[in-house]
Structures are given as C-alpha cells and as structure tokens.
Length: 393
Ligand code: ATP
Ligand code: MG
Image 1 (tube, rainbow, N blue to C red):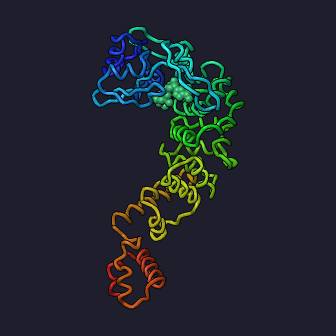
Image 2 (image 1 turned 135 degrees about the vertical axis):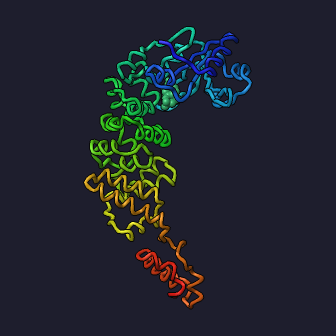
Image 3 (image 1 turned 90 degrees about the horizontal axis):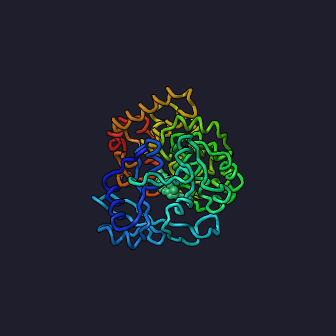
C-alpha cells in the first residue's frame, strides 16, 4: 500500500532528507490513511533535533521544543515536526520525567500507546510497523504496544484514550488491553481533570457511541465521576445517545441525565467552562419536566434560555420520551412562531419600563418590580396588550 502525501508534507520530508536526516509521517495520519480516511492533520517525526529543524525551515514556531516539537509553517498551513524520542522514566502514572532524543525511529515507535498509532511511513522506505499495527487496523483492534499493564502504569490517560479511540473508530479493545485497564483503572486519579474532560468529550461526540459501555466494563467510570456514584443505566443512556445529534452539551446532558442536582458539581469537577456547565445543567434539570403546549408556557422557558437551547431541550425530551415526539414538534413550531411574530416575553421588550411606572406614582423598589412582572405576565398571555400598556397605566 502507498500513502499519497500532501505536497507540503512531501516537501518537509524531502527537505529534512536533503539535510541528511530521516523523516516519516507518523501516528494518527498514518492510522487514518491505512483505514482509507483522509487525515485531519499530518504529523512528521524526524531524526533531526529541534534546533536542526528550526535551521532548515524558514517559518517555524517552537511549539514544544523541550519535547522535541517544532511547528513548520508552509503556505500558512501548520505541520508538527517532532524529533524521534524515547520517554524517560515515568514516576507518577502521568508524564515521563524527561525526554531523550534518539536517532532510531523504532525507539520512537516503541513509546507510542497503541499498535495502530505506532506506524511510520516514508514515501521511499514504506512502512515502519514493528508492532503489526496495520494488521490490527485491518482486524479493528486496539492493542497496546508492549505489555498493557506496564504501559497504563506509565501513563494512565492511555486507558481513556483506548476507550475514546474505540468510540471514534468502532474498534474493539484487545482482551489483554481491556483487562489491563480494569487492573489499572484507579490510576486515573493521577490524571488532571482537564485531560480527562477532553477525552470524555471526544468519546461522547464520537460515532460508535456504544463504546461508552467500556467506561463501565473497564471500571473507569468511578474515576471520571469523582465523588459521585454512577446512578444511571449505561445501556439506556447509550440507546438514547444513539438518537442524539453529536453536539457536546446535548450528549453531556444525556450522559449525566441521572445526576439531577449534582450535575453542575460533576461538570465543575471536570473543569468544564461556566457556559457549558449552566447549559448542560439546565437540560438535565428540565429533561423530564412536562412543558404544556401553550404559548404562554413556552414563553416562560424562552424567557430564561435562548431559543436554540429551548429547541435543544425539546430534542432531548423527544429522545427520552419518544412517545411525546409529535407534541414536542408542535412545541418547536410554536416557539419559532413566537419569535417570528416578535411576541414579548422579557421585561426588556415590554413597552413600559420602571421609569414609566415611577412617573405614574408607583413607589420605587419592590412595588415597581412586582408591577413590571404583573404586566409582563399579562402581555405573555395576550401579546396585543403590549402596544397599549402606556394607556393602561
Ligand atoms: P487524533 O486523531 O485524536 O489526533 P492521534 O493518534 O493523532 O489521534 P494524538 O493525541 O494527536 O492522537 O497523538 C499523536 C500520536 O502520539 C499518537 O498517534 C500516538 O502515537 C502518540 N501518543 C499520543 N498520546 C500518547 C500517550 N499518552 N502515550 C503514548 N503515545 C501517545
Ligand atoms: Mg493528532
């Protein structure tokens, strides 16, 4: 098999070679090419040291020079060029103590996580595939390079990467790799919440969503939901996720649908941003709430959430209550109609404000607030009133 490289990548490889170095494409781009999928980015690995890489190319950024990575920019496109390296000793299931550069591609491949990610390719030399990664790709298997228990002891994040790749690729975890995760799952406590979050989001938005089950079968789930016992039914959640658009907040809401009032705390522990936290927590809180099919009731929701979020809530409700889908569709149409007709459901859009009320003698403070609420409620029931509010005061 031959991989067709983009012209810029061929150029980077040949420039490195013309200066006496080796260079290969490696990792995700080789894995994807072997699967017949166009890679989203192309990573290059080379025997040249980072300083040599910087010398050879006119536009570079020293992205992670300590770890050997230099970004080479050609025609405004970015390519990561990383020096062959072996990882120093791992002391905390997290990161190697130091990074040692090497001039041997096979040493570099030996530090990589899975056989499918430990393949390098060079247009002239072909594949360097010491762990039979191409075979595992053909068999759709995720297998650790070397002894899985040791590899997960070195870096616990790899366990979550394995599950995430299962979701993205639809591959199966090879038995020993799967069992090693069970034995090492507790080491996930050494991994930062941010890195766990990134993997969870990738998993939840991936196409082979049944891989979420692996979080349970590998015992990783308790170390993701720190301090919160899992209270859901994974089979049910997966069947719901299958009907859910692949949007992060929607999928998170279904994943955490069982968590109720604890949802916010869970998302906070995983260091989600405030915007995501409030959006997802609102979906979870309203997931089973019955919304009557009356414009007035719909406006009460629109007052507190953007139209798009209200529609998302309807999407989620129709997934958890499929028998209600028709009614929820009608609700969606009503909410759009409310918008199109520009009906008022916020104090801001009311035709009178606090100053108007003060002018007719309503005392400032609570009385004005209460009166505005009263008027808004009346306008939400009868939109035509908004035009006449002044005359009614
Ligand atoms: P993606 O499509 O998600 O980018 P990828 O395979 O390119 O997939 P990256 O996280 O970008 O994944 O990593 C690039 C390569 O670096 C991987 O293919 C793998 O060879 C290696 N790698 C990344 N993380 C680890 C890790 N924790 N342990 C060992 N090797 C790793
Ligand atoms: Mg990548």
